[in-house]
Image (cartoon, rainbow over all chains, first blue to last red; front, side, top):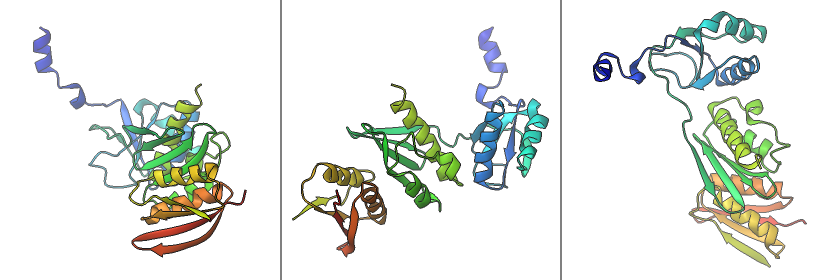
Length: 182
Length: 73
């Protein structure tokens, strides 16, 4: 019986996710800002890579519960953000950063998220290095963060305007999880 | 007297870590750091400055750079 069902039902990854939609934006900075606003407002959203059929906008989209579409759009309009496109999810989305890579250098810990690396001194929790990317705001991000303790440093999400800024925020969050939980 | 840190061939963030360790534990007032990429040059100079040091000189050295760091503290 279950074997038969397994043959009839499509594999989970191929099932349609009609309960989700995606918001497409022109700039990555809008994606980052929209994610912050929507998360703070209690919506369950995720930043993802766009499906191949989406030809407009930047390298990231926001996946959101489709039934919340009007509320989501209203909240974004409140802060002056207007998506380029809103569409139901019809194919699996790519996660922009699935894996973190961590390297322990003894007194130093490095976390890489996608194309960005952040290294801290684990004794002082000072950010000693920010590197990676290829985005124009990486030198600015590094200048703002290096030499500051994690508790005093600005959040990369508040400084960045690109995919690199977003990836660096994920590395920052992972380092906080690793180092500030004790 | 200057201590030389040879960070050529090392990938990020190791040149920075070696430099900071030398700044923190070394006794010589000057440190020469050898790196072989622009990224390492930027990262090392930024890290040294954040540690309160002065970059006295950055000059081409073979295929890379020679960074002269002055410990101010």
